[in-house]
Image 1: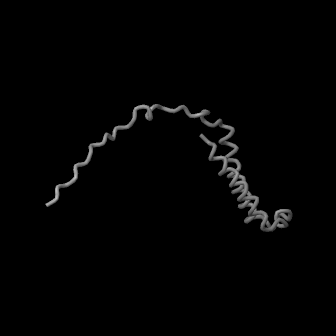
Image 2: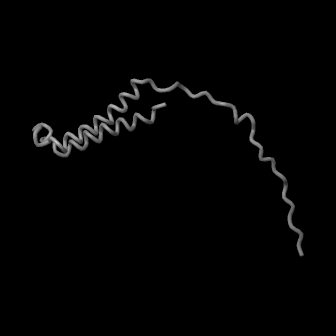
Image 3: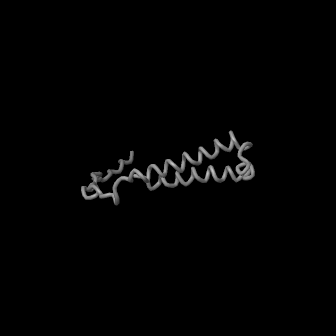
Length: 87
């Protein structure tokens, strides 16, 4: 019967240099940034709600037709994109 191969013992310890803390550039986001970000998302939601509930009473909004969806979702996407820079 053939003899099994002997494996070399490998050291799996983590290099201590890789565990040093790294300073993150910039601190937490300011209050105004978070409020503007949430404001965009809420403004988009409010635009769509007003379009569904009162578009027949607001002639300028009824004239926009499907552009209302672009405006509402566009505002929400701007707020969503801003969340990527939020800390």
